[in-house]
Length: 219
Ligand code: C5P
Image (spheres, rainbow, N blue to C red):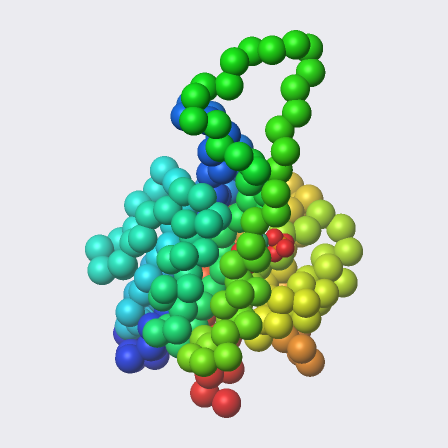
């Protein structure tokens, strides 16, 4: 039965963009819709898992039964991820985490100044790499890589550098696929194997991704 494939399994997923505050009225973010992460949460729930969904600000909602943890910034997402990862069997990083945040968040609205202005940014932590580096209670850790070129090489580098168990790569330069779209195509990479998942709607792809992860856990 489908609903028991992930019975007694806890899956934690990050989804959506992060929002990096500049001052009380402004932020830096990206166009991630959260659709792929929410589709994964939905699929994991259908397979009988206990699901934690750590979500940046999105305009979609999760199904009943998913434990949604709403966050805004990368730092908040990291805190939630490190709280939930050690009690998870599977961790999937699907969020489009901002690479940088403002070095200082201005307490007051930044006033208009001269013709140029500069904001100093500092690097955000790599959330999934921190999860994959856990030495105790490390979950099976799965990342996503959105690339516009050299998809295989960049994805494999991320798999290795972040110490992931698996990475789902997509070519976001392909029209109508990836960011914000309803359809996607993924290539899954492990250290020593790969699998092509052709174009499908994100819900069907999410189910395929989870079934592949399940096979790995059974090994
Ligand atoms: O390095 P890049 O952002 O392309 O890597 C993508 C993968 O790493 C995704 O799984 C994403 O959720 C995760 N990531 C993260 N924390 C960051 C940057 C990326 O968890 N600061």
